[in-house]
Image (cartoon, rainbow, N blue to C red; front, side, top):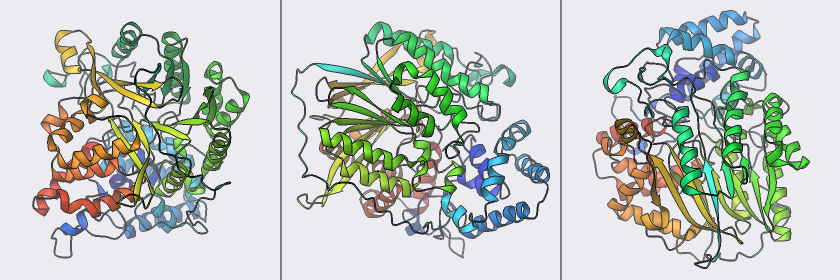
Length: 608
């Protein structure tokens, strides 16, 4: 989701839209866009302040009509049998001419999307209106889709959860996400090379602050030296890990240089490290959007079998059960029992990834994963099992197709008494999402029903201190007792040539929370809105206490955006929050707010 995804997706590659999405994931300048036909700038060139917080994504206006024109032109070229090489050459030339990336990046990345772009957009059912709706630039209403999820049984009466008794035995869950380790990282190389990823010998030496540090750089991926120091710290200082959630994204961000071999080796490298350091832990992996080739590209079954088959072999010792391996090979998802009364569901969240152009062929339930999830949760409910759900992309962010998220939201609320918690990565930030269900006994009419934890990344890319998280859970019920986030201060490590991994914070202590139930997280969000100091503490944690929050403090519009993200299990809920809460946060002039919010969105999308 990084950088100017949709801006360049339309402006640069009108004739090659999916390739543009992935190039724009890795660019260092972004102009966020707003979708559909609302306008931020009126016919006189004045900023429409009211529309700033009524839009899907704030920024400069790129209209639905421009997108439809571009797709129509590309489809016309495909249908008239224009030579594929001619279209490819045009896309590469345009990418280079507009300096979206260096020529070698354009030449390396765009051909990776050749087959899927021509195949998907060559389908006469993929009209410009449908394609542009899918990418979020036009109204999007698939035919014969109501959005209502049907469940096999009615929802039982809700029972309020009770926090575990203090002093009960606990187990420890290690959560790792977005490793993105770069084995080609070289100390002293240029960290600002103008390519999607730098700090390599090919980039040449850097000077001053632009020279890659021994232990890492905030504009590059994590190196093996730092990654190994993290595992050594966990092994020596944290001790035994009972359970490990590994939520994907293993290759570095060199997306224009990748091959099937490099992708499989990246996941195998981390697999072997986890086997080495955590031989006794129960390990539950999930698949990230960077595991595929090209990035974000997951064809509907059996199109990703090259990846799923390889991972099923690598993970056989962890998954064991043939039923789990079967669904992993089919769609990249599975379920396994964790202990008596608790199981884990690992979702392949690439079936909601709005940069996976293959989902145009089935946007509502690709690979049948949502229906499968309902079946697993219903079976669990029938026998009194509780469930952890793990995956890569959080459902409430823009990267996850909102029609999919809305269905998932209904599933979470239907089975709220079965689901213990949800765990994701992808954003590289330290975040959380609270789900809400209708409940007239609450003054707001909404009761907090579930919490999704988004763990910060192991990689430093972008502006992030390398991090991991430990969840302390009640040994019997599985309820969360504490979350403890650890990090390495990269500047400190480079200055003193020593990796000093430390506890950054314990959640209940840092935020004065009595427990980690959904109602307590909802109360915390309310306190963030009233207590600027407390919110600033949270915002520091978002970036794992890197220098960025101090260099770019979170102003009014940033604070509104951040708080609405906490309350949004779907992007439509996020938009509604922006609209209803804006008067509580906005005190600056419209132009100040626009500049501030554009800057905030630009930075918050620098990840993945």
